Image (cartoon, rainbow, N blue to C red; front, top):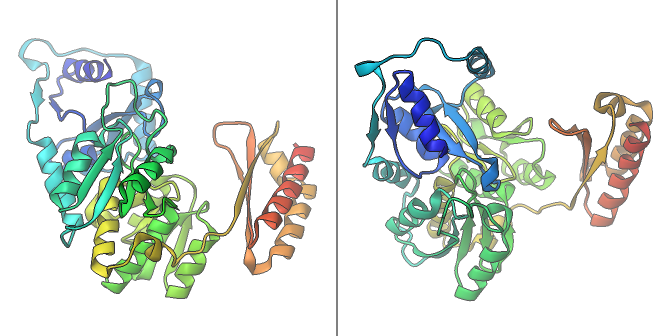
Length: 389
């Protein structure tokens, strides 16, 4: 329904619509440039259920739109339609039958060695990776066991994929697989589980890839870009390896902005959005999975061994409801509570207060060397925020 509505709107304004079918968000970004299109449109709910489907627009070259362009689009929508073309001036619908194959040829560049002998479970989240994900991994030589790869338009992200890892953990253990990779509905994320069923999150994946790229001389300026939510363990692992870490606000768009501003080659989020500008203009879960498996084969090491270069510190997150986010965060009593906690933590932990962008909440995040201290200090700061809010 949404696809038909988008196509009708575009063609009614004289725009030709190149229909690529069900493909991941990064495929649309890539194909926008590959087809030399003026822009690309992705219909996606990301990691959310079907009712949350929306429209994501890419500009020329497959790059995300800046704020000014988004504001301009919103103003045009609010103004309503103007004169419409008629007759031969309306747009055409063209089915791009080679779209999936072109995208698969593109992602194959991420795999610099054959994956023969590697067994991987792939959770497709009943989403956009359901066909092309297993095809990409099989083409690289891996033995693929796919789960949650039967989309019907309603079951996307339903208790599966990168936000529900129970199924992939069970499948990895049941099949004795070397690893599992879990995508979200539009396949711009990748989380992994090792052969023991233990989570390898976006932070650990970034550490593995950063070390691989540093070794190959491909980590531009020896720098990794990540967000303020990345675990302190990532920072400690990178410091030990001599890798600089640039930190941004939460959201892959901010990671992308920093990557472009500094001409860096790797960035991402704890949630599994991993961006390598040399391989695409946005996060690509399939590319991430291929690079992770390439590193396993190249080193002969298990995923657990590779991920062990980062020791994740206990992290506690408390959401505190407030009436005035700015006032609560700036309250002297809150600052005093934060100062006390930071003094106790020293260099062995950190505290982050982050107002929610969509809800009347302040998120209190504490990382510490042990879980008891993290809970205790997070509760202390959260109580101060609640009293001030």
